[in-house]
Image 1 (cartoon, rainbow, N blue to C red):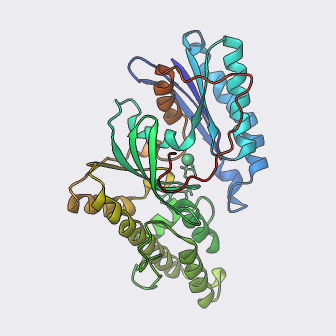
Image 2: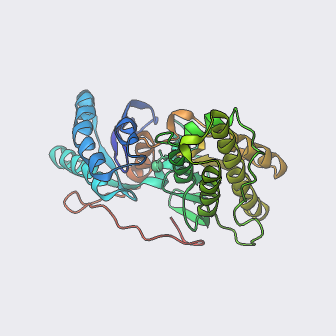
Image 3: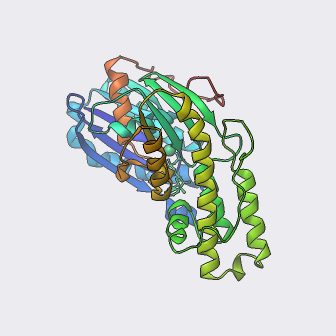
Length: 337
Ligand code: KG4
Ligand code: ZN
């Protein structure tokens, strides 16, 4: 069995996965959304302190599996330095005490392998990764070859949902809140600009859209003057412009990529509106879209364990003394994740 740990942001999570048949034997996550809500975003030091309490709490529930552990996998990049350290410290202690290998895992590769939890991997595929920290189109050729096809030049999809919610004083995280409000909204009331609409650039940009949302809120007299219908209409119009943008840029990639399988991963992949628009796009381009397993869209340790198993099979171990948070440079189009 492999024990996996995730603490790259505001979720403390530990999982146990059986290596032979990929069965997830234990998976628990404690989210800190309530604690960060009042600040409208994640406060790194607070997150770190909460991980220090919650990770050992979850770990203590996995003791029955300890005699069967063959390795420990832990997210060590990218993420918030102070929160990654909490997971790494626990992973190192465990690996050293039990004298088993330690494996540092790339969080985004984990998100991609969330598609294969309790399943055999099926590659190659094109992935749209939309999370709180990242927005990328990736060609996943194999376990260790993932090439960036397009990336955001400013904000991420999840972040723009969170900011839109924050500007209307709706709390954190904003994605699910905005999606729910949008269901009762008129998506044509506000004509928010679709980012990079007339640009040939295959890239994402969300800061202009965020600004347009801010101006709309101001024109209505500020957040405190909004009616419930205003909030719903702003949410729907924002979600529409953002989705059109993702579709428009992905179209160009779909036209040139021969790979038939496509999936959306990351926290914002839980959004059904975005998913249904991509499902239609896939029909046009004759691609197969993966069903979303809603249990594993947001940060979790099961995905870290699933990627960890592939690394374990290839004996890609890290030194338990020296494993650290890895500084990840911003990867550009054409480079590997
Ligand atoms: O992958 P994730 O859990 O954490 C990171 O690695 O960043 O993603 C969290 C992000 C948040 O920004 C959250 O607002 C967004 O995912 N999110 C959504 C939805 N559910 C979560 N965004 C849009 N629609 C949703 N239903
Ligand atoms: Zn994530």
